[in-house]
Image (cartoon, rainbow, N blue to C red; front, side, top):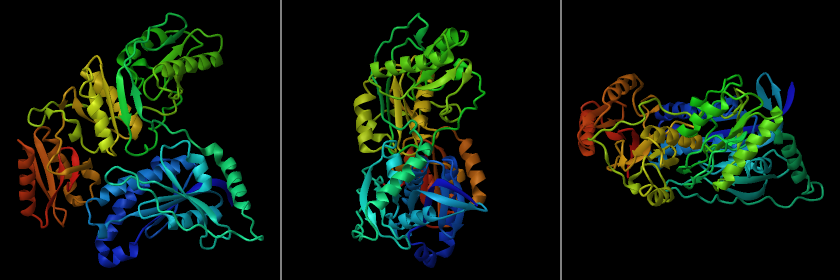
Amino acid sequence: MKRKIAAIFAADIAGYSRLVAEDEEETLRRLASYRQVTDDFIARYGGRIFNTAGDAVLAEFPSAVEAVRCAIDIQESLRTRNMAYPPSRQMSFRIGITIGDVVERDGDLLGDGVNIAARLEGLAEVGGICVSRAVHEQVANKLSVQFADIGAQEVKNIPTPVHAYMVAMRREDGTYATPQVKKPAKPQGAAQPNWMWPVAATLVSLTAIGVGGWLYFAKIEMLSDSKVASSVSTLAPAAASPAPVQVATAAAPPPSSPPPIPPTEKFVAETVPIVSDRSRITLAREYAPAGDFKAMAMTNGGINAFVVNQPSEEGAKSGALEQCQKRAENLQQPRKCELYAVGNAVVYRHGHPPVPPTPWIRRDPLTEKPFVAREVPLLREAGKGRIETGYPPAKNAKALAIGPGGQFHYLSGQESADEAARRTLEGCAAVSGVPCMVVALDDAFVVPVPTTLKAIGFFQVATNSSIASEAKADVAQRLSNAPSGWNAVAVGTSGRPGLALQASNEQDAVNEALGNCVKRDTDCHVIAIGPFAVGPN
């Protein structure tokens, strides 16, 4: 048996027995779909599922930060999926997380860490997350989320009260709910002094601190127009062009960082992510051919600097980081700079932000319309307000991209539409951790933006549980063959889809999809318009 410290994640479905009793077949089908979501997120964040039983999932993570980020993304994703069902049929998880000393035996984990995680899950609200004090201490300064201290809680079969915190979850309207504070445990007597638990939690935190991670691409980014002169010394910024306006915000804490670049990857200026085209040219001309010792550093917003011809590798590393950090501060962006390259080897641990396949923009007169900030889909009101004041007056070329969870990012003053699209998509993916979509270019929407129904996410045929499995391939093929006009998808109780392809307007697409669905199924409703999954307004 092997003993180790790990972040333990426990989840199960609230009211699962009732859901099964009401409709066993439908509940089991949805459980399989929802478990695919949770399993994918756990794997993405480096977790390992070590036990399952019915609707329950137990997983371990090497980092408390990644465990909490995973839990938040799971709850946000399932909240969106639940919007398609009435409250009585919604399937919501409770999640508990702790850091603890556990024993590994034949792949399974045993010990107090597992037991406490399960008890914290029982304390969590429906659709919520409850963490131990040890976890809170690890993540409080690394994740931009709010916590409510619910104090020491007495839980079953754990002799010492567990000090717990609730994670504030986002409501449907974009605001954050204040978790309900549970009744704290009664003070302990002399046989169980109160100081023991804080000491124990502190020791566990100190032991596990090595597994904490820095939150990558999580904060709001805003760069003001500013000219930075090029330096001809060996201590040179990687770009001399004016800094473009950039705005990015996340509606939810971002998912995991993109896959890491292999440590043996050779530096290629043309593939450096997020930076401007002009920066890439400077890197190709001045950094790539230079001899050692040299290094380049950058922020997750594209601010960058490099040094060449340094007396040592350590000097090159520190010089690049120092110059990059100065640039970030001068641009009022106190973001963390990290090394991207040392010599001609890429050492950047976060990898390339994921972007969708090209073409990123299709200009279609049937769907294109003037840009209106309040009509940007998926965003909260605060985000729409920021876009309304910042995007319309900004200089072309500009682009706005959004993520499936309500994240957004825009840039202006770029040298071309292609550069605006690339950097906007990379910046948005840096926040969300998944591919985003360009919805506006200059002063026009360049994707069909639904108004008859509410956009609730990106529409993906393969993962949509409403469509019958045997029909998915046909739906995907037919939609891919209709790149222009308004498309819509409707389904009924049996999952038989009705499609509208290349309609001239949104209402015609909705009516046609419903009409085709009712020929094959009953109780039909529209689930997609254009690239968006939709629900009731």
